[in-house]
Length: 209
Ligand code: GTP
Ligand code: MG
Image (cartoon, rainbow, N blue to C red; front, side):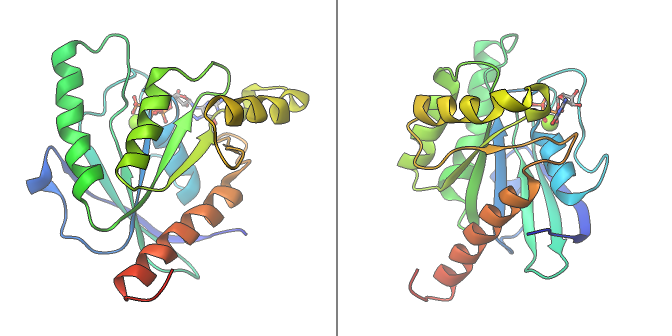
């Protein structure tokens, strides 16, 4: 399914709950280690260069960044670029600040439809990835796992690598193999995001799942 985005615009940055925009359309958040490709994935999904800032210095995003996204044939959404976690140079107090920023959002935001958990398929998933998925599960938030920068893997390595990642993270479905550079996997990710958003909308309308 190819999704054309007609409007993609930055809404606001928030340093805490008081900075969140009023709840509106279903939100999809993007989480993962610094430098994994969160902002690049948002830009690629929206086909906009420079919508979310792609940093050459990892770990720069210290706020929740909200974007308004209107697909041509679909309902309006928001994308939320979360700060990167697990960056080695981040010290303890910065890590605590990260949790203070992200936890309330993931736990309390009523319009949060799901979280895209981005992983680098070239490395073994570590405690960060496991913790994130466990934590989302405990919070009752659906997760879509996507493996970024898949263009860096040779074609024949891709399927076995995604399968290893699926097994390592005990996932029901294989992760989406994604490349912001070649645009592989974007249609599949869009399909999964739209179905999450539809589930939230049905729940808000009081309809059965
Ligand atoms: P922080 O905001 O610092 O946490 O990083 P991020 O997760 O938002 O990553 P970002 O999108 O800024 O990308 C980090 C680097 O990876 C940049 O240099 C990107 O150009 C590069 N990158 C992102 N996606 C891809 C991809 O699909 N393929 C390749 N080859 N490079 C990518
Ligand atoms: Mg970023």
